[in-house]
Image 1: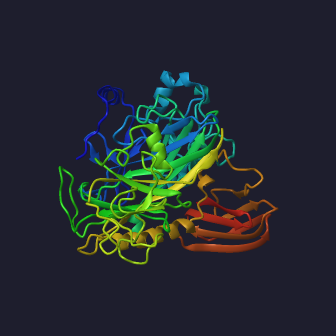
Image 2: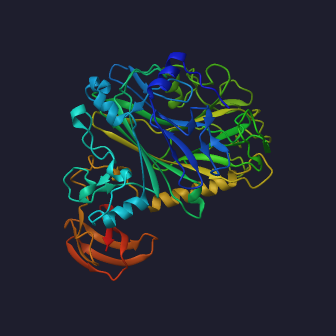
Image 3: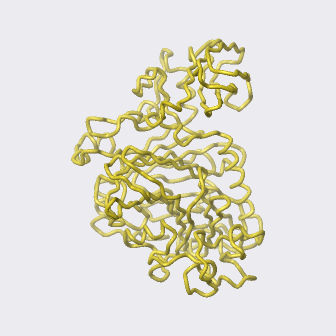
Length: 545
């Protein structure tokens, strides 16, 4: 068990005023605790880990995770939000108010005091079929989906993604509209960094609104052990950042938190953790995995990393938990907390035993299985014995991976996709689970790529009209005969219709857009039509009744 070090007044505030809400996502073999206070996978009520796998086992591989954001303004002033389980909150429930006074408005508290919404694909599919049928009751998960914001509180008009059946810009499930989610079950979280001062890092307010869609698939294969995260970050403020940086922090604890090793894999865009000895025993209430313990990793699915690092709980100042905004910013940009560069060898800190003077952006980037080095000329891992480059003892490690810096102006959006990957242990060795982790990382990246997810696909208000791919299917629902209109300027069309199990029902090729008639004798149910063209792809659900 780890312990929060919140100031007493802040702890009382959290407990008394309910500053964040929690939810559990456990639709597959994972049980993950989520909050709208910036921290994921942590049971703050009892200071316990909150990413349990296998579900029901009492064993966890992550103690806490969060996203850090930062950038400097035109005057060089740092603006930063960097919540962890240890510090005060830097990010808060609900959408961003352009007029600060509305955060204290009772209407805002009533509407957004809890900003976590969950919905299943089964409920959505049932709604698609029955929304206009007598006697149908819309489930609260669909009825209360936050598709539109309360503009009277100066929040954005469009919030959570939805399919707008009649294209009127208003989320109305009584008219057939429905949440636009990924996976078999999704939890949607909306947060902002402007509601209060940043007691966690002391960083200045950025002016961001953060949307997380955390989703799972329930399957009989490796997907059953995964959790996906889609993150969208909106600049709702007035400041332009030339160097905006987004990082994902994770305190990855394999059962017993005190005996872990970590590493980074720049080829797979992954940071990972594995047990530092062959037996993962119980420790202070944390249930260990025993022999052949697993490994856990977090992948950036949507693009390459700029850096990946680690630090150790209780280590020397400059290489331990950050305490001020500048130290968070250093970690986020490939430096130690005290500003020293990462270097190859040893612990990665200049002057440590076995270190070199060669800078690096990826810490401990060798392959723990002893295969070909991934990014360095050495076999540089924490378990290294043949290169003499490390002499680390297992410990309580924290990991951080950062995206490349980006321009981020008012009304801009940035988007990221991640997956939490689990590798089952298969040998009585320190690297038990690494092989399975690498294989699953490759499989989930291939799966994700095959979905043709556009990170902006799940939003309504940022599509460039000049590049929008217009596809309309009508009537929907139908009795099996329907038409499709595709923008005439689109060429090289491929139209594929599948059932919900992925079985192909029809396929059609057209040289150019237009209006096309379709007739199918398929059974009643929900089907997916995917249209790809020279400009990209679009997916629609259609209902045969």
